[in-house]
Length: 282
Image 1: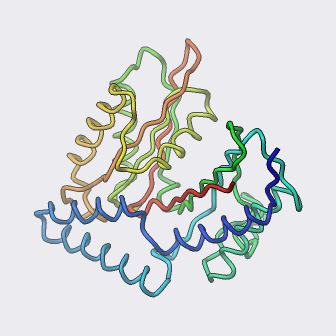
Image 2: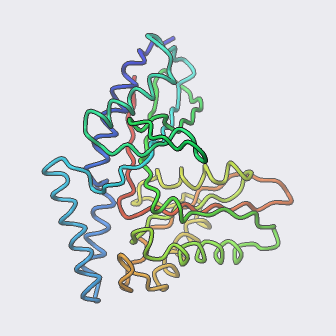
């Protein structure tokens, strides 16, 4: 049995929260560079170059890439031979978020009640926390900071098996089209297929944790990702809505088994920043 002090979880989350607020994922940065060089529309190319310049300034001066520093979502993949010591793991996760946001002067965006009070919690807690168990004596931590300009444009639909691949494509593209310029394209789009109403939404977010350098390992879903990306870019929404060639940088699909009568599909829209990171504690 491996003992891991919860303070290690706190410090890891605090560090990742600070880093992803100010530094692009290298794969996303490279994708924007490539897309910028491929843009032929003058306004769209100017926008892409501005995004790259913004990224350089943010990293150099250690300031946020965007004023919306997002809600924190945390995944803890806990080794079955791990025993946490030193405190409560849920409190440790939230302390990491609190520390990361307050000590780095990141905007606190969380409110305590969704409908009535809506009082800002002042430190971006509580985090949205998912846990599962894996083999081994280590903990894998994944974090995502999700801004709501794009989150608000996400959608879920309970399709039927008869809708098939064409129904999935139609819904994904409709969601991207409805997002338009309001969700800060070019997008990274996570698509969850299968499971239940709640699981497919989770899958759509987890799909975006995968590096955009990598596609779905199933060749059928990879082909669907490629087709959706081509058709999304054919919408000509373009960078920040200026009708260029790059509406999306990548479409990421994650699938799961489902009921014989169901075909749940969730589409999670993410702006070009797509802030996420991973650390292993052992």
